[in-house]
Length: 123
Image (cartoon, rainbow, N blue to C red):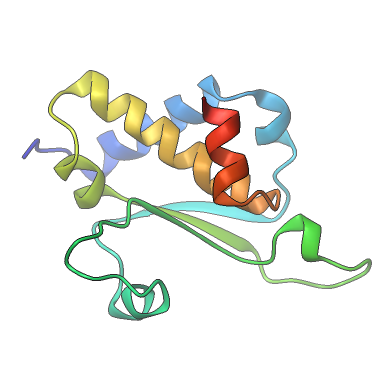
């Protein structure tokens, strides 16, 4: 497994944000993007994960498509899981691409896109 500091991982997330279509990045409102080594036990339960699945990222919040006007909301949160991502890649090029793909996937959830819609946009 590749060794990666939190600072290096954070820089790769920043790099990915700079490479994604900026209209989606600038449209993020009241969203915090964080990193964690692994999902918490609560996140594992919430996502109904088993030993056959790896959680690379997670969007927690209310998608834009489900909000009603004037609602005061806590910040939405996108978490990228460093150890999970590092486990599924073999080199730095794959690492960069996986971070970008995972970040885009979670940002798409913020915009209310479901998995089949996200997959079509990534193709």
